[in-house]
Length: 142
Length: 155
Image (cartoon, rainbow over all chains, first blue to last red; front, top):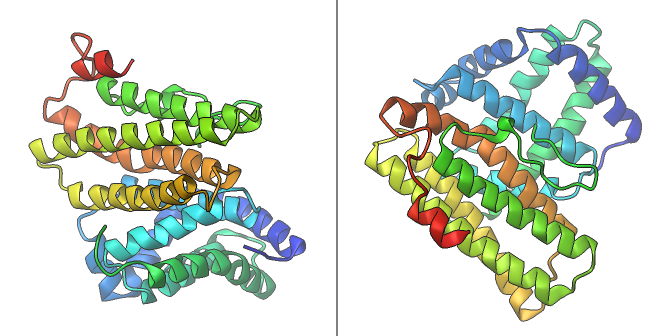
């Protein structure tokens, strides 16, 4: 996963500000679940604490991948293939990214239009890896 | 996220505990095998040693998954299908990689090692911690009353 170092730094700083807002995870899930009926169906009846743990985990892996940590790309590939097994529609990845960027805009007091582009470039690269893996995934379970 | 020692090994801590001793003991074995592989690569013990550890890690992982999935089925865990699919995908990738390593078309690499470390810590922290409160509520014992057959066989 490659992004310009200045973009990576700006992303980390914005994520640190946004995630220091205690509403960050709730705002994200409210936005994401409201974004489409498909998403609402997937998350109906799910435990909110579990979902928050998943988002923290996803963001952690995303930041590792952004930083070029070894094994993180393989993990994103694994996530994409698991999502395919779970019948997650590829369009939901874009909805996820939109909800995440909108949440950052709401929770980072220094958010700007430039930062919007930075989030989309940096996190979008990770999302694209998951989408690519999902496309390559075998049609039937192993 | 899970603690790593200065040399990059996974350090077992209460943060990784799912609150069920039997499962924790199995996770500790997995952490031990991943750390053993880390040392083998770092200290250049050779590809045969790394392959042998990878084989043991694969065997133990499959057994551990079977134990977890049995527990989930017995207690009718609602997240069983989702959890099982995570196991299936890891096993598929593991088999694929193991085949490449066995035929010599790939080596046990730091990339694979770090993926396994990441997978193990994320899976315990994110997915296994989802099922443990459910199991404990339904009567699974937090502490094993005696040393289990599983531990006796594998330690």
